[in-house]
Image 1 (cartoon, rainbow, N blue to C red):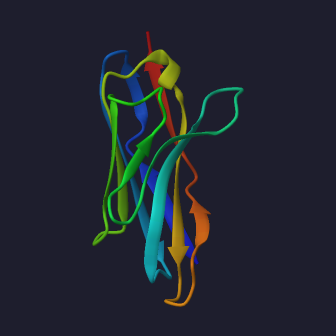
Image 2 (tube, helix red, strand yellow):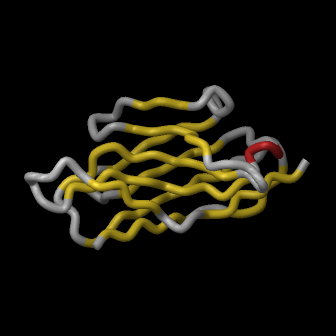
Length: 121
């Protein structure tokens, strides 16, 4: 199996910064696309940003210019640097990864359990 564990969430005032990390472990041959999603209170889960294995990134309009997604393929770790946080960024943040457990596979999506981010006004 594959485990994804997020860390780095917390409480911050508007305008502050946080850095989330997501470490993947277990039966892993290759990690392809990785992504951060978030689920605000009472709302559906939404894509924040994603990154291909080669480094190509994509951001939602709401975070573009404030958040930076990155990854360390050698460490199987995903990051999200969040700057100039706003109260509307309050949510549970989830990482996901498309993991091939064997070289012949295209991959299966795995999810972390989430990290709470609270931004006060």
